[in-house]
Image 1 (spheres, rainbow, N blue to C red):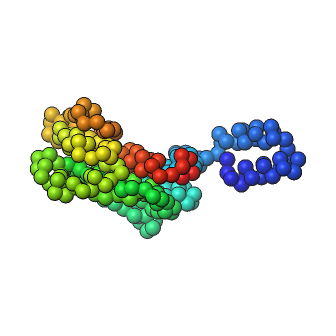
Image 2: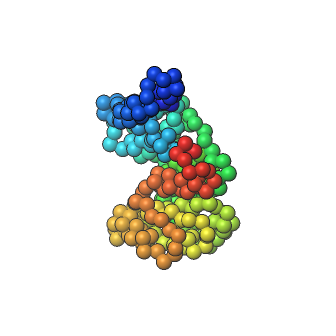
Image 3: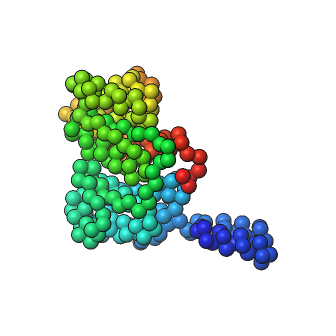
Length: 263
């Protein structure tokens, strides 16, 4: 229910035109039909920012270019941040030809537009790391997702265990000051275990589908991360950079703001 309709009902109660019980019934009856926009092919969740503090993200894979454009336009009309993940190149070209205000991030396979800059007041830094250059697309999806939600993000890429000296040289101080660390890795997925043994921050591990045959499309990395001997690691699904970015943002926000979906 919109704030205006709630205000109208409360004012009607104050004027004695409707009883408090009837006003409550009216609110409950209206709630299920509001909060989304029905485009026919998609029901856009325009209420998600109020409920969760972040707008709906659009998974663009397997949607037509026209569907993605229509969803973007509806989210944009609601003045919420536009975040589209897993965007095929042809869809990105189609959308950008129609909307020159949409930004394309090829490495992350994302489309974005900032309508509501909502930086986390007093928030810390989310450090996004990846083991190899081949893991960058997933790491960038995580980093951009967290940034679009309002968190500050730092990046350290290509610091996998095959050359562990790179990790210490590039990220030693950053691991100690980050509020949350996201680590993307394929192959055997060892890097999150190493990082979690070096930082007091919670670590979100992202297995990637990078690797040779026995990596089984990221399953080997997933199992390795789930079986890590280092504590303080949470594991998201294979290649789920967006999920890692969202979780890191929620942890970052929870540390400095009142526990309410409006923040």
